[in-house]
Amino acid sequence: MRENLTHGLMRGKRVAPLPYSTLKPKGLFFEFRIINTHIRYGKQKDDDLSQNALRQNEFNVLTEEILARECDRRYGNFMPSLTILLGDYNLNLKKEFNKCIPPYLCEEKIVGRHTIVTVQPQRSTLKKEDDFDEDARLRGLSNNFDHFSYDKKRMSQFLAGEAETVKAVGEGSPYYGTDYEGYRREVSDHLPIVLTIDFKGSLRNAPEDNFNEQEYFE
Image (tube, rainbow, N blue to C red):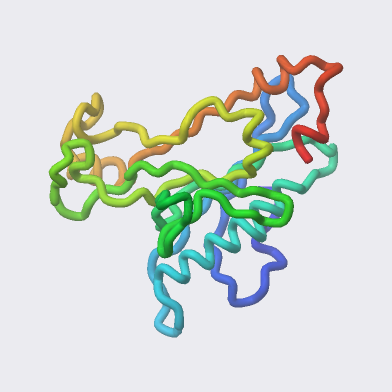
């Protein structure tokens, strides 16, 4: 972690600690930044807002004040970068006539000159009880709380696949089958999520005389 990412936020803004990693793909003058979050589920006794409102406020701070800031930040060697926020948001993402309806997350939001996109709409949490839906594909699964957020323009150069869950448990799973309780006991009450990105194709294969760093990263 380079620094405390919550430094400078106004007092009273509730944000959980944020693990922050930087990766440098071999052979490329480029930095990939990952901010991991776990938006708090509950509330304190003296909180005036509802749990959903508190989570939404925390999401707004994460995307509007931290993610947008880190997207623009260059460090000592002025290396271009891509920054992704990911984790358990404890909030559902839902498309409804291209508008977000509370308490659901917006798929896109404008933050200054950034369009922040949040993806991964598949159910990713296990139900507390074996309360099966009629749809076998959703048996044992409850909410789509696990997501990725990033700047739309910058990610467009690297995105190589849709964000989705890993079929770690459930109908057709090669790992735990439909043993939801075994998976919960031994692994987690969440499914893993994946997002495929391609650094080599976007950076190495760009013709040098056509590569415009400002277009890619500004």
